[in-house]
Image 1 (cartoon, rainbow, N blue to C red):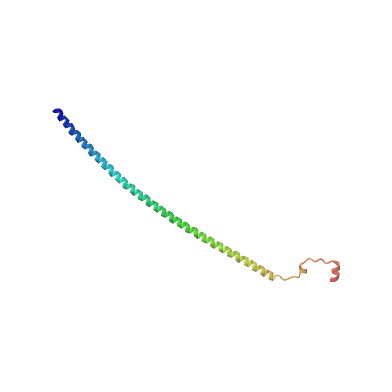
Image 2: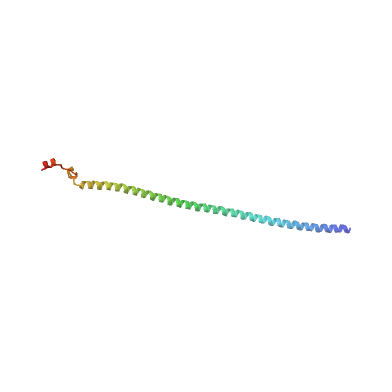
Length: 130
């Protein structure tokens, strides 16, 4: 009988220890589940932050690209205007050169060919000229 009482006592102690272990296990499991849930929430928040930062960076890059493109377009427009101005100036200069050439030709007195040619007069011609 004593042995039976001792076994009952041991059984009660083992049951109490088992219940304590179960309780500890459940507490640990619940704590782990809570931590996993918090990690999951933090992970989702970080994903959202990363996506927002990526979208913001993409928007910033897009704005920088648009500004650069607008600046390049303006530079091309300025270059085209300069080319047009240079071509216009070249045409006007050519016309002015032609005009000055015509004015200069009109101001030069017309000479007879004998005036501007080196004429050698031989003895017979001198005698005739007299």
